[in-house]
Length: 383
Image (cartoon, rainbow, N blue to C red; front, side, top):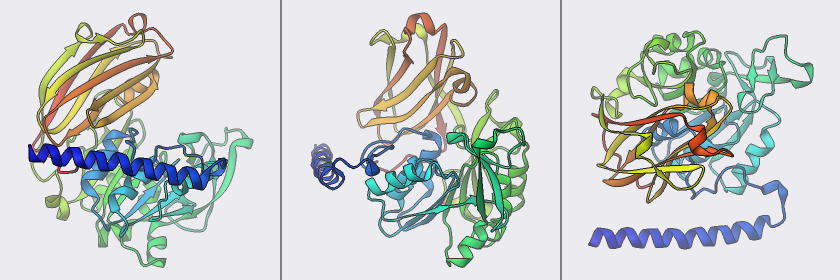
């Protein structure tokens, strides 16, 4: 009873803080387009990249120095800023000049005073001018000559080792998502990988070479899938049929301080078929299940037209735990498995929505299996 009253008090205080913060924010930025947010306010849940978010939450400690390499509009920058707190610092790198205004606005409008923005392309050496192709979240360096010339920019390169040495910084955790340039960035990060051994999470395309995996393992790191929690050595070790994965890299000497210290196994806890879902509306179907505290993975298998847009969401009474919102042609190879965390036994809602389409005529086949990651410690985080 005492714990319940304490939790209710905290939630009431949170609501009051939210109202006061938004009032202040509105007074400061009223009628100002410059401060318009593109990501949620600091106190609201952020659903993007749930697998990476959970791992960052596990690895980052208050006061840490972290790097967000390839920040895009700043969703994960904001999450990392919350985690390091006022005594920590985040250095955010973004190469796309057309994204910088949006990223800057998001940091300012959320009052992220512990975030430092750097415009540059993270590479294996500094001060080179690189061709950069603008394609929104998929913008990239090292392009092919067939791209349209109006989509090209010249961006100056930055080596992480050079940047950190110049600013006398030691990184604790690094998130890296730079559309295939990870192998180049890692070569320019070799000194810090050997000396300071920071935790690292980077994006990996399974249809590309395994060069980045080879490089990081050569520095004494062990590598795990951020969604499946299994150790991986090559692209063949990832979930069958997957194309985009995020790799968690922990140095062998630091594995003892992480959730990967014990052997992990996936244990199926429950499964559902399409007929188990409750119809909420013409486009939304939902199902509920009760689960104990722990780390889980919800694996969705479905069949639908390639151009259909799917929203796949895990939610509890505390809000959204994770969500994918994607066209099926990209959803199927990259977003079928959604990890989530429960710090206490809870009722979990699994929501499936077809965007701008009727659900019953769009979803042709559907099944969900929920696995518990046995051996992974139960989270103590309140957020």
